[in-house]
Length: 320
Image: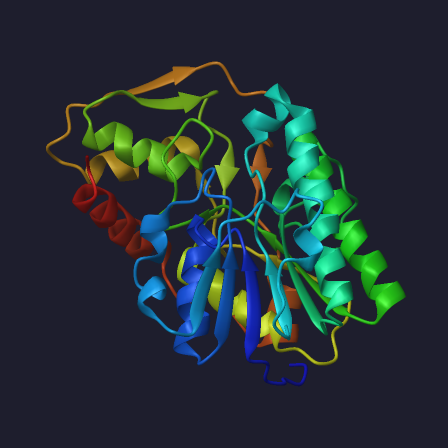
């Protein structure tokens, strides 16, 4: 495991979002001063109810695409966690320019903030989508990239900009490729992940709708594990340019996932149905965690079905 060093002043972009809000909670628990930045387009202020009571947290309602963004923060910054993004494959197919503006131009603006503040560590949340449909599984970080959607292409571009800024300006970029993160607070919409969609369809007695034949596989990792690993990455002092997968260690067919979720909602009258496969989706997705374990000394701790129980319970308690 690489050496660790402590930093205490953090910026988190996309702070009101699903993963980032959990990261804000973790950083505050560890004694950080945190500046959260979010335009609240998809993020929810409800995700930050507790941090907003904390004197070590402030929220700036700003858009990373604004030209003035790099000069927004006046305080010293030790580390930037860049999670703000449009993370929907479907939306990127429908509106590639919007996704490019947010995920690429926005990332350059955040990197400019890092450069102007002489930030030592820049943590980018990227995606397993960059791999496309790899020839072998589990996919390793050195696998050739093959974007199947504008979203995937935008994430590759964000990675390359982060590495180039690291090479030029002396900051330490750490890039995490997230695989299918799930847990409480994940947005439930047609653009979100499959788990909140299935759970909410079941809770509302709507058909649990699978896109395609359901044989496609995914590896899911619980959000608490993701933010713990992301934090550990920020503390590395000798891993500049590291690219690390964050994946579950097992995979499940989407059809089996639908059945598991239906079984967790015994009072539901939902049926499992199929419709056409979605453009830009990969068939199978599971990442090797070998490098992540070696570099961070980290492995996921929350079993998939335990995380699923916690997630279903959260959505049940937050039904409108």
